[in-house]
Image (cartoon, rainbow, N blue to C red):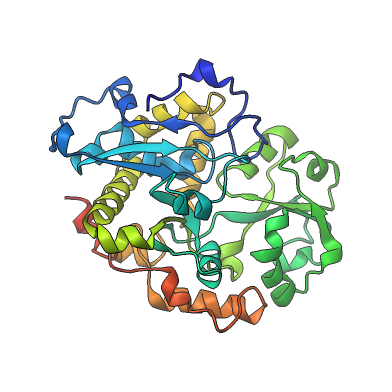
Length: 354
């Protein structure tokens, strides 16, 4: 499928922050010629496997490695004709897209993966790009607010999904209460007005916007540094695909990881593609997001430093599962081990840099 031109999408703001008024967009590998890539693929077109990746939101740096692999021809080098299906509020869940055959791979997270096991949905996580979830709580500068615990009792704008993800942990660990919650509509306006409040966000995005709009540098508490140890930005797929075509899964994982190494080294090709489909994404915001990905340990911490981007471990999955059981998010009888496979990752940094 040919990718849409930017003019055909009538995009005003394609970011995680705003509720967009259109459906998903498909970006095919044919866009590579527009990115100035002259590298010849090592596999002939007749041997290429068509693969679709669904992302968790519209084009932005938090998906940069996938766009880099597309823009630079890395996917083609691995015999893959990849199409990216961008997410939006109107797009069905990753589980629905995977089970319906709309996509072959999807960006997910540990919580959704374990919930899928509990619901009998045969999908599986095969890599974890984010070692830390970028989810954060953002607060106004205040001498009395030094840690996340200091936000106890203050109004916090959170989404409905927080109730089945990080909020139960914050209640149990820091004494937060449901009375603190305020509905979050992806609009920082209420937070900016109320200096006693806080709000959720992604560390790669919302703090940048708040600083620009509010004229101050907010306090940012990355939840992963406060006990919320889920993997995020994961690559998940159907169990059937892992069983019937593990070579395809391995090539997609390897190429995607290689794309991430390339993106973190020189993001220009991927950024050009991101900006093509997110018309209001600025160079300043791109630079900020990439800086946060690096400095906050989102991608390299600590397993990925030795085992390579995408690393996972059974110990980490168990620790996360146990912590969520303790606050009532998961039932203890769920077989969390069915949520992931270590078959396709942990090959060492050098493996992906060949």
